[in-house]
Amino acid sequence: MTLWQMFVSYSLLVAAILSLITYWITKKFVLRKMNRTIMKAEHNYQQQIASLQMQLSGKVNALEGMVNKLRLSNQELTRLNEIRSKFMSIVAHDLRQPLSSIQGFASFLMMDAPQGGDNNDQVALNNILKATDNMNMLMTDLMDISMIESGRFKMDGQPFNFNALLNDVITLQAVNAQKKGIFLQKYEYPSEVIVMADRFRISQVINNLIGNAIKFAPQGGRVEARFYVENGVLTCKISDNGPGILHTEKEKIFLKFHQADTDRNLKKQGWGLGLSIAQEIVNAHGGDIGVESAGLGQGATFWFTLPQQPVKEAAAAA
Ligand SMILES: Nc1ncnc2c1ncn2[C@@H]1O[C@H](COP(=O)(O)OP(=O)(O)OP(=O)(O)O)[C@@H](O)[C@H]1O
Ligand SMILES: [Mg+2]
Image (tube, rainbow, N blue to C red; front, side, top):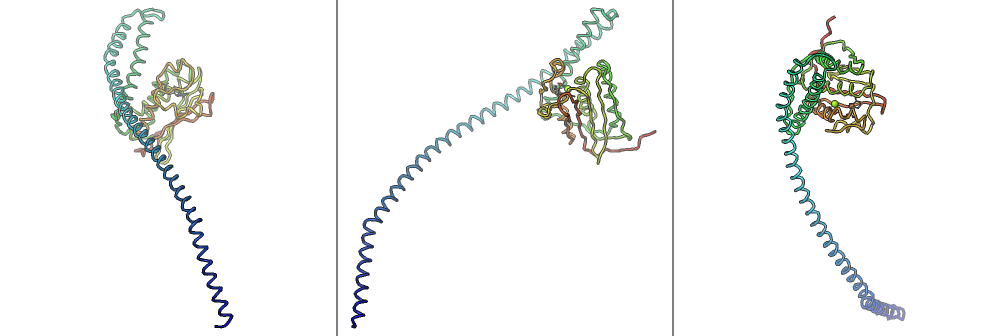
């Protein structure tokens, strides 16, 4: 063995011994310390996880309790709603009978009462008739709402002349318009339009829209009614120069019993039911209803659509 070979072997031996010593020291001190730190951290995490799990299960229990309470109050609400709906329909139905008797007797006495504008009997009987008329309208609305809520509000589609219907409603409302000196105008559509819909219900919608327009337009104001057909969809518009509708109220006024913050006297002349019933009727025909208004004091245009294909759109007779 040469001197060089002996030197290399010796160096390798020293290196191996040094590596072994380093490995032993590392294992003995550093690795053990690391292991201890890891175990401690693991223990801490496990404790934290256990406490979080406990908190979570507490929250889950509380949540389950809340869900149960909510379910119970929901059941109670549904029950109360059913009772309310039933009560409303019974009240509306049972009050009609005595109401029509009062109306009948008042009309009968009216015929016998001495004539003359300032006659006390006539004034009193007139007031009774007006009050019973108002109550009758409320009964009708309440019956409709109760039918809507119980799902018994059905439409009976028959073909009818839309133009003639609008004329009928305008003739009926002309008396109210005249009392306020309102100019009630109808724009003619150049052809006869026959639609397939529930004539009575659609007349209810138009009556409420024109009635509202007359009610809210100022003394001596203007109310306009028009309709047109475009791509098989009929659109009817009723405009007035009344107080208009605030942007924030445009959807709310279609909710049951909602009345915008307008004149208190005008509010008293209704119950905030007409538009919600109108919306129900129009939607049941597959149409839409809405309002356009530039804001307070700017008047309003209420519109609704009947998307059914008009049965016939013939040229108007001369
Ligand atoms: N043409 C209009 N101009 C201004 N506000 C209107 C007009 N039409 C309706 N409104 C507002 O919308 C509200 C709801 O109308 P809706 O027809 O539902 O009820 P109402 O006329 O007050 O009572 P009801 O129709 O039950 O007799 C009205 O109270 C009013 O505040
Ligand atoms: Mg109304």
